[in-house]
Image 1: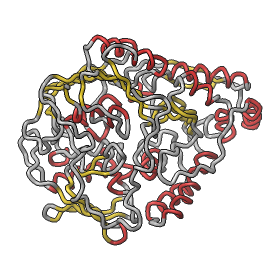
Image 2: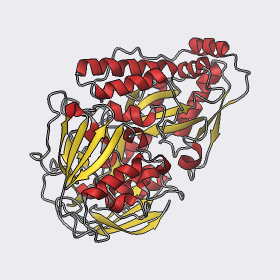
Image 3: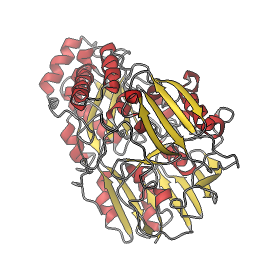
Length: 518
């Protein structure tokens, strides 16, 4: 069992391709996830118990929102490139990749002999159409923010080439975005068909309830997908999910509440996996909506939250304080010179008075669907804000429909981000003015210009400087209240072999691919 203090190896994280590595190919790399090298057993029925499923969940990767439904994509889909446990890139449907023109044009060699679950063979054109669909404004893809930097997508034989508006050394990392599973014909005709090239074939779908799969015998990679059948059960109640693991109803669960992690870890036959990193639990304010369009009001709320109290009580020590930006020292080129915003009732009251707010309730909408302990975190926030004279009011929302009705729709709500492999992807997905998942409605021309400049900058020192300027703009002007970076806490049956720490939660979503019954 990992302890609270466990740290993700940052030296082992391979940053982009660097200025000297733009001609990198992956042909010499091992197959995905070969770090888990024990000989696996085959067979059995593997069951995941997951939080975050809703009746509104969809199989369309473009508009897939839920944390639980994303694991469905991981089971039936494959990506061009995947992330290994140490954070490096490994081949998947792209056997190799290289850049030309200083990182402005990227070429991906598409693996041959790969079959979709409907019998169609993968072609480079399927890849082109997939990426084109996620680049289309009408698709409303969660990956649209990163796709907007691509000017042209074309196929030549087995090679797919992407021409960017500006060079980007991190482009292969962007292709790991969980929305970008490759679909037959790009999903143009049937985006929610649930057909991919992954190790498991979807056999039943009940959104918000359960999903079932069977092993896809023709999967191209024999080193993953060891179970005969696989099932995902939605168990949104924390107590019921833990009980299901302890009773053997499920073999692994996500989002173990920090307050019970130690207790669950002491149960016979149960292990707890702790993964520190980039995940963060937040409160998001729409900067274009009153009263949150007032900078002083935003600052008042930022100063009014006691970050250390939330880490100690809500996270039970399984995490670290945040600083109102989405980046921490798990990211390459992080600038640790940004001052830590401190808890100050005096400054909170001062900025609240300067805001000229009329004293009406400031409503924070929240559900434990947002993150474990979200209700408790909001109530603690309410207490400290009220102590500063800020009329914060907590409105509890039902879990079902939270991600479709509240998040990214209402002006002040609780949310979480799992983080991204590199800074460009995190900033582009959640903070670029045109990003669909810009859940603080943050629109800043200077920030956008710096982001585009940073993408094209191959000198790491200069790139770090640009990222630092971007962080300071968000820190000062943004609508993000980021009180804490959370550790991901998973529970798993010790009957499983192959379980190990990965880049993110539930082995970065690949638990069903990488584990087996010991």
